[in-house]
Amino acid sequence: MAQLLLAVPLAFHLIAASGNGSGVPSFDVRPSCRAEAMAQVTTQGMRDCMADEQDAHDQLVKGWTKYNAADRTACSRTVLDFEPTYTELLTCLEMASEARKLPEDLY
Image (cartoon, rainbow, N blue to C red; front, top):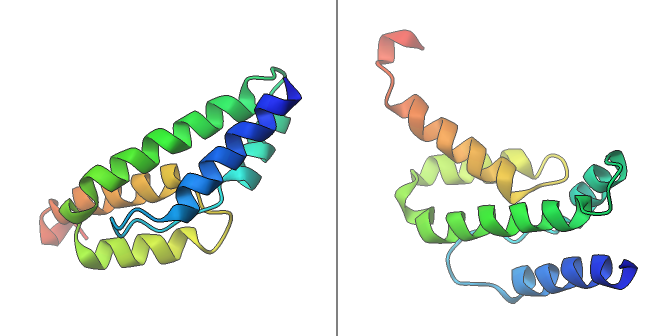
C-alpha cells in the first residue's frame, strides 16, 4: 500500500513536469495532498486527493483558453502564494469568470 501511495504522486509529478503545451502551469501538488491525507483517518486520502488534482488539471488543459487571459495570470499568481493546487486554480478561474458576468454596479 505504501508503494502505491508513493507511485501515484511520482507519476503525477512526472506528467505535470513533462509539460503539455496548454499553458496550464505545472504544480507539485504532493505537499497539499500529503497534508490532506494526514488529516484523514483512511489510507485513501492521498490517492483521492491526487485523483481530484488530476481531474482538475485535465479540466484546466481542456478549457484553459476559454478563461480571460488576465484572470489566468492573476489566478496563477494567487495560487503560487502558498502550496498551489489545480483545484484552487480552477476554482479561482471559475469565480473570476462568473464575476465578469455580474453587472458593473455590483462591484
